[in-house]
Length: 149
Image 1 (cartoon, rainbow, N blue to C red):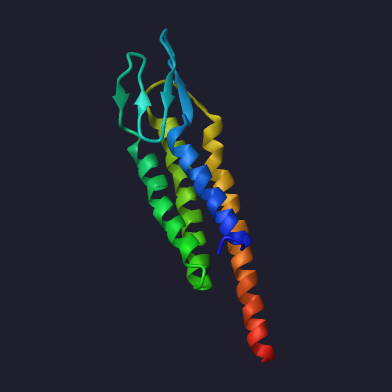
Image 2: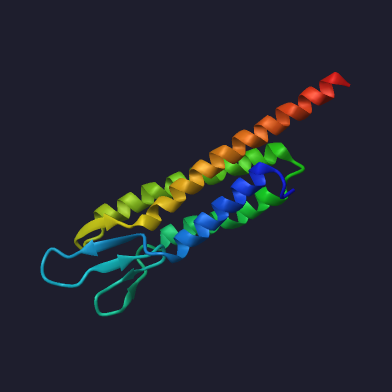
């Protein structure tokens, strides 16, 4: 299981997703005087130290991807399901970016600037595509071997 390259891609994508969950993904700079506010996947930290949970949907989307990724890792015997899991998680990450842009534009905290941790779901998406490609190549190899018999 672990020796397959798609499993390594899925594990790396899992690490990227977990890191993105806990790192700041952006900052709001107020138009008037005031301190910057950091945006995490679960909350926005306001200048007085309170947490505003208006961005919880970002956390929920990434949190949904984690058990699906683990299921994809352990479904190595069912390559078709593993490839479907990869595509589904890819679409969830794409949805995460849509919600991220919407929150960045619509929240009334000021000018939004993305953080470096916001690129981690993109890295995970690339890893999911690479894993899916390797899974489908394995499936083609098994089908070719069955045809030879």
